[in-house]
Image (cartoon, rainbow, N blue to C red):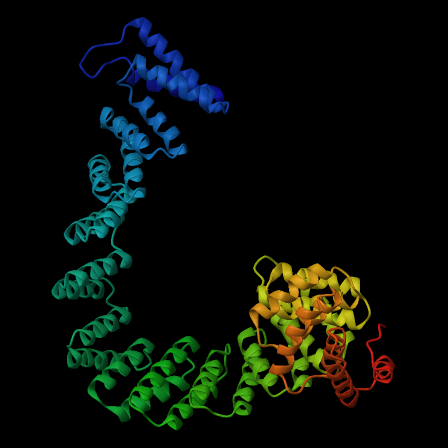
Length: 572
């Protein structure tokens, strides 16, 4: 491969390096020196020694400043170095010195195009087009450049040339129509359509396209006339029948529009995608005119009476039902129908589960979540719903197993909120099981995914304080929760209790008072905490009152009874 590159370089040199621009020639010795440095630059580049290759090219340029290939190669180095000004200069110089070299001119044009210098890119590609006017890539590029300048006449010129080179095609014809439309040249658009009909006289689709164009351009009756003629020849023509919907709508023929719509929705020849599109239009029209929703539902049900390829029309129905505030139970029944047709439709399943969650139907949630894991194993929502349902049913073993299964699906694209909740709840369950080291590891993972997960921050901090471990870390985490939710009594209690554990009794009293003020239904645990804090702040009267309330509200633990009996704070 190395020898091939050298031979190629020698061939270039023999044609390009011996003559100066002013007509003078390099001496024999200079030619040999130039050949040596240029070829050695090629060799060094092939060996990966780019710095050495660059120095050799610069030396070759000094010997022969009119060698186009040197500037071309130097330009490549400057592109690598992201020195756009020098890259542009060298590409332009190479193209100037070798005006017949299509490669150099094309590279210059590409450089200008990438730099969004459309004017110079056009000039370069026009020079290239003069050399290669039968090259489809060059013609296409020029078309695109002219499009950025809104030079419609030149765009048409390029499309005509492309048609000459490649032959007639629908793509080129339709692109011409788009250009003529941008110009507002309706006659030219119509001529293109007529030429397509003439080209394919036995294909009615082009005739239907023409009819649609006529109706879209204010010639509704003329378009309807042609459609009627097409349907007379072929009553089953799907495209013409769908186009006729627009004709009836434009003419205000509501009865015929409704009749044809129903017929199309019941037809086995109409794709489900087209039926769904038709129904969306029906819904839009009906809502805009405050129409009767029962008529829309009747049409939807007509479409659903046919075999369904997917759940699209069912999902359309649920959306329309929600728009009209129909009961969730009815909407849920349609979600179930959708899943019967398309069991891997995760959207239908998640929406169904969300409705069930609001009604606390935990058994149903479990029943519908589990198949979701089988059909969409990488969607963590289904493990989340099932795990939470088990957790709410106090079945911690099944909840933990579900969450542990779910975390195996975590990847870099996973939703941080869901992942964090997984680990947070797993931490809570593991703590309840007495597995604190695993619980704390789970909280750590939660906070790696979502550092502001207040549930994990609060529980992690509280459980550390109960063990008298890492109290400074616990205080820092708890502080984040009350910064986020300054009126949350649970978070205030946790923070006060950690301060108490650290011996900061006055500060602890400040925050436990805030907890008491913000919640009149405090738990026995919070009340006991408050009593302990008041006791060590020297207010035994208030402490006794709080301890007694805690005993009345809770199970009256032996330690609490001991505090009340001795009328003093007692450590565990």
